[in-house]
Each structure stands twice: as structure tokens, then as C-alpha cells.
Length: 424
Image 1 (cartoon, rainbow, N blue to C red):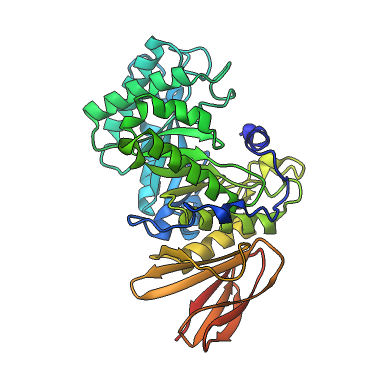
Image 2: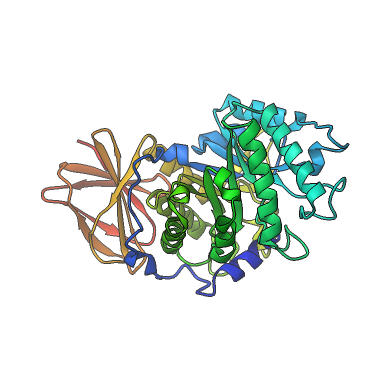
């Protein structure tokens, strides 16, 4: 999507580097476990841009540990004649996803030349047609565990031309929500898939009735600063939900699109892997029920084009290869995280070291694992642990050796996370 650069510029006026901005550490509502959190691997997914995956592609997504994909569910492609719907392409996609127990988050998005001029849905006639189509899609795939996301970034003029209009979006959201509530009460509907953390737009959505039909609020918290700064944004969002009223405060928060391009200024593939790990860990430790990384694979090979390099794997497909796409370090980082923390849930952030230091514990039954890093300069810290021996695993799954514990585990931390795994 060409808007990535514009989104980042609009959403942040801070540093263009992966800096040591640690404002989120002072947030009282950040880094707290939630009681109904899913396990780590149930919480993570990737954006895709295809209906028909290449042979071996879905297997590779599953091998990385992802259990969700997010994909456009395009109105104009599935209703080419009025009130005649063809969802067969998505039937094919879901068949392949089902084979690997991957679930879908489908974006109900964009206009249809049968009813609209351009991508936005602005008239009563278009809204009614959109709602009929959305309900037809929901019925066709009912019971499949799909999350239906209402539109993509309606606060961005690229997707809601000529100018975003929250009243128009609210009108669409309410008619679709009412239809889902009446005819598909067991299907999950979320919104507004908001570009950046635009609280003014979101407050307007929440001041209307449309969100009453949603099971979650979805946002796209892009930034070129530290992922950890998103903790403040999530806390402000929850404060907004609390202010509006108890009927809204139950809504979960989903990060349905967020990534870092390895071709951004002062980024590279290794830093992309670092930010992926820290982004996912930040979301897990801030009660975000689902985190979707943008993007699954690179969109091209132009080294100077950031849009080409959000992927976890390279652009070129190798039909006879194993794997079929060449993994970038971020792929290895995702696989390491989902492998080492499979079945675990976030427990707490330990008060160890300084505010720059992030020491997160994850628990599965009686077992506890630790992930640690710092946003400051590399240094040594001690984690209070009772087990006598631990393995250190690097961010990309390399064995970092053994450490002994008496009154605590002393390790070296840097901006690259490491996993501390008990071995006895």
C-alpha cells in the first residue's frame, strides 16, 4: 500500500530512528496482564495480498507460527451484478487456510462501481447495498470463526476519498452493525481499522451507536519510533472507552495492521526482526488480543522503495525450493517467538534494572519463561529466578549458551530481545 509512508509521517512527529523513547514506561495502565488473554500463538497473524497462494506458501505461514491472516474481502470483486454474489475465490482461500488451522480476518472494504464513485461508501443507497453484501458474505461463511473488519482506514483519504468523513463512516457502520446483529448474531464484527491512533476520529465513532455492534476496536499503530511507545496509545484508548461508558469499556483492542519496512531510513533487515519481536511482545504485554504484522512477503525488489520491504520473506518465489520463499531475519524472529512461547500467556513485566529495561514473564501452567531487552545502552542485569540453570536463546533462535542461577539469573541485555528458558 502506498500509504505506508504517509501514515507514518502523519502518525508520528518524533524520531525517524529506532530510538530510546521510553515514555510508555511511566504509563500506569500499560504492561498489565488481562484475565482472558489468548495464548501467544493464538494472538499473532500476518497480512496477505492474495486469494490463491503459491504452492507451499500457506505451509510456510503456518511454519512461522501464525494462526491468523488478514486479507481484503473486496466488494466490487464479489458483487459484479447487483445482488448477485460470488464468494468462490474466498472459498478456495479458506480451504487452504483450514488445512493448516489458520483463521481469517477479512476486511469488508471499499466501494463498488455499481453503487459508488470510488472507494468510499457515502450515500444511503450505497450503504444499504454494502450491508446486504456484507450479510450475504457473513451467512456464506458463518460458523467458520472469521473476524469481519468493517472497512480499512476510513480516516485516510486514500481509502475514503475525497476527504474522510466520520459521519459517513458511522452511518455505514451502524447499518452494517444492525444487519449483523439481526441476522448474524454469532459472527464477530470489528472496526474501524483506523490509520494510526487517531483518537479524535475514534472518539467520533464511539460517540455514535455503530460500535455497539463491534466485539473489538481495531487500529493500525504505525510508527518509526520504538514499538514500546504504543503502550501509551493503548492506555489512552482504554481511557477513552472508560470515559464513554461501561458498555464500551468491554471492547477488546486489536492491532490489525502494523509493521516496519526494512528499507526505511536507519533500518535494515536485522532491525526489522528486532522491531517485529518487540512489537509483538509490546502488544502481548498490553492486552492486545490479536496482532497482525504487515506484511507477509515483500512486494518487490527495489532496494530504494520502502513499500517493497515490509515482508517477512523476500519477493521471489522458488517453485522447487524448500522453503518456497527466502526467509528474512524477521521470519526467523517470528518463528522463534511463536515456538518458544507457544501455549504461554503474558504474566507480568518485572521491575528489574531501569525504566529502559523490559523483562517480561510468560507462564504456561507451572512453567515460566522470560524475555528481556533494553531500549537504552547494552548492560548487565539480574532477573530474580529460582531455577538453577537456564538456556539463553537469541531472537532468531540461536543457542546463546547456559547460565547458572543462585539468587538470580544475570544476563547481558541489548535492544535485541533474548529468551531465558529454564533447563532444570
